[in-house]
Every structure is written in C-alpha cells, then in structure tokens.
Length: 460
Length: 140
Image (tube, rainbow over all chains, first blue to last red; front, side):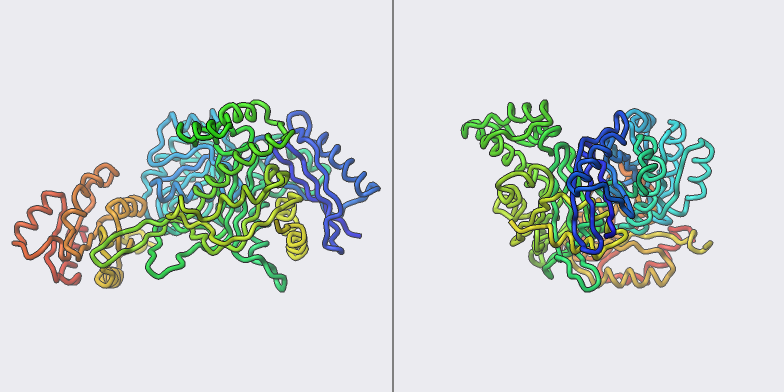
C-alpha cells in the first residue's frame, strides 16, 4: 500500500488527507487548529494523531506535500499603469497565483502609497506597466519610488520588457530583493499569467513561508509547494479539462464561501456565444479566480450587510430578521456554529448574499449599443451562460442542509439580465473539502486526483 | 533589435457607435506595411479606449476613423482627455465622413482643429495619400 499525505495549512484549520495510490481513494481525513502563532508542528501533530487513529495504526507515507494559506495567506500589492489595462492584468495574476490583492496602485506612485506597502505587511509586490516596447517612464518612476521607500519584501517586475535593464539598475541601486519575469500584458489587451505566476510561486516557497514561520515544518514533510488557492485552481482546472482517457466535467464554476472571503472560480474560455456580440477589454484567463474580501460568513459578516441598502435592511426587518445585529453576532463570535434552525436559516441568507454578489462581480456583463446600423452588444468579461456545473465548497455550503438554496442565487435571474450568469447549471458539492488536497496530488498523480474528485464531488 | 526599438507606435480605431470595419482593416494593413507598430482597437471604440491604449503602448499618434456622420459629437473633448492622461502632445488625426451631411470642408476642418486635432481629412481620402504628412509629423 503506497500512501500519500496531503496537508493544507489553512488560516484556521490544518487539514490532512491520506490517499491510497493503488486504490485511487481517500483513506482518511483529519483536521486540527493551525498553530502558526506558537509552533506550526503542534497542530500538525494533533491532526496526524487523529489521522492515525482513524486509520488504526501509525502508517508511513511515501510523500508528504502541503499547501498553505496560514498566517494571513499571501498578501500582495499590484501596481500598474492604466486601471483597465496593466493594473487589471497585475491583479488577475496575483489572484491566479493564489494571492490576496490588498493594495492596488495605478499610474505614478507617490511616496505615501509606497509607504503603505511597508505598513500593511505586504508579502510580495508585483510591479507592472506598459506593453512591451510601450510606456517606460511610469514603471521607471515607480521602481525608483519603491527603492526610495526601502521596500523590504520581494518585488517582482512584470512590466515593459524594453526597460528591464534600467529597472534592474534601479533595484540594484536600492538593494531591493527583486525578481524579473515576462510582461503581464505584452500587447494591448493580451494577458500573460504563467511567467509571473511561476515566479510568485517560487518566491512564496522560498521566502514567504519562511518569514511566516511555516517553513520549519519542512523538517517533517517533503515540501510546501503552493499557496492554497493556487492548489484549488489546479484541482478545478483538472476536474474541468479531464486527463488522458478520463473525461472532465467541461465548463464549471466553483464557489467557496469562507468566514472572511468568498472565492469564485470559473474554468472555461467564456468567449461570446452569439455572432452579434463584440468582446471588449482585457483578455480573461481560462481558469479565473476572484476573491471578495468584504463577503464572508463571520469575519466579513459586516461587509455583507454593508452591501445592502437601507431599504433592503428594512425589508428584512419586516420579515422578522434584524440582519444588522445578526451580522454583529457573527463578526464578534467568529467560531459560531449554527445551534438551531433559525441560526441555520440566517446563515443561508448571508450565504445567499455572498453567492449572488460573488457571482455578480465575477461574471461577464453585456452592454447594449444602439447604432445607425442596428443594435450591437458588447461583452466585458466571461460568458458563463453554458456552464455545466456549479460546485459549492466551504463550511456554510458543506454543513448546511439546503446548499442548493445558496447555489441557486448564482444562476441567471430577472434582476440581472445583463449579467452572463449560468442558465441551466447543475449543482454539485465538495462535501469532503478535497480541492486543495487534490490540487497537490495532481502535481504528481493527475489521473488519481481526477478519479477521486469525480467520486467525492456529489450531486445535490 | 535596433529597428524594433525605433518602430513608431500608432493607435487606430473607429470611434463611437460606428461599426464600419473595412476601412479600419485597410488602414491597419497599409500602416503595418510601412513598418509601424499598429495597435488596432477596432470598431465601436470610445475615446477612453484610444487614450488608454496610447498610454500603455507609448504611441506617437492616434488615428481616429468615423464613417457614420456622428464623428463631431464622438470626438469632442478628446484632446482634453489626452492632456488629463498625460499624453497631451500626442498627434491626433481624424478622417472619414466625420460630420452630418454635405458641409463646407474648410469649416469642418476649422471646427476639428479647435477641438485639438492636428490633421483632419475629408471623405474618400485613401490612407496612402496621408503617408507623407504622417511621416513628416512623426519626424521621419
């Protein structure tokens, strides 16, 4: 029996998944609180003991790999030139690499903005700007400002390749820790994620987890390879595309509603489905991830209420729900687990707002243009109308008795006719919370990871 | 390498709610053959798309096409927006059926010059005809 152990050091829980490679199946899972504040080994050992108990003996693993979003995840600052272009491209690269975009700057940086990078404990700065052969002045200025501010964290340059040499000179002059990669937008509206994502991953593996006190676990496991959201992206992309003879699910959308954020993933090209639609704006990634920092079930419960108008809050009150105090209750008591039917019902309402808005901000939109030649339509973003499945994950969806009530809010509806939401998608559930583990497994054994996902992701 | 660095960048497109694509493709073809780096933002393009493209690509000129008669409304304020975006000195060309009906072209030209356009071309001007002026304006 050859066993792999896949570990996810999450912000709250350290989750372990043991996989039997020959049977292509999960043997056992276990979890315990993450203990990065004291010593990351403690939580890992507790979870491991639990896992041994479930298996019935102390087994040995031929490989132990991990992903991590502990100690605040991967906090990134994205810098570009024009908001709709290189700034947007830089943001998408950060999200696609599994980061959180905590700061976004456009055009010429000032010293105050650069100082915020130091103050807000950013882990990595991604500096973009200009197409290849395009604008140089802005990135050169911004590199200089970063240098003068004495940025302590790694800076990744992913801008105009024509001034790479000058950029390196500036970084050297100020002794910054820097990395160079391909331009995130080499041509107008062309998005180039891969090179920058790989550099972010390497910096994460070598520096960030060290700084956060997570790397010392590597004396007991093989390696921490990915930020957790990057692992999830790998898993869902595999689940969508399939591998060799094993078919995938085709176009899919995944929603993960957590305590602090709502993550939405879509795996499809999202190109226009009709001939009279003109695609506008920056190219979209095939595997796209968006993160809503203001939408979450506990830490961000107040953010959920803040998206409501006074009118809507009043309407909830008329229905007997004081949504503001319910939000406060959740935000101050982040470990809250629904105790009765009413708690669960209210959790559904919060989750519905998260799923509805998470989708609204992720999905592409149509715009009508009336011309002397007839009506034309613009499409900004991805067309998700033909998506086959919406897969739910995250505590509230997994443990709630009515997950479909939450997921159905993502579908096309009469209130959002200009949004290209899925029309007839079926609902699936990641009941065992296995995406991050399967993303890790897919790096070595994609076929087994795919088979396990197809087995454990269930219909609802 | 040296040739690539020196290659001048020109942003072209059709402004406003105008979907005339043929002339736009011809302009792209001719300018590319002349050795320019052509950034074509296509039909149905608002002013902001021209300007954003010019900022990121460090373009030396923007060539605006308009065939459907509403060019005068669509082009208003474009120079001011360029100034706001930090590319106030960029060359702005406009051509096509840029106003409604048959009007005295000298008058049309004056109105577009007041809007800040450097070169204004009447209906039916082939792109080849403006190449010598374009080259001169670009300092070639």
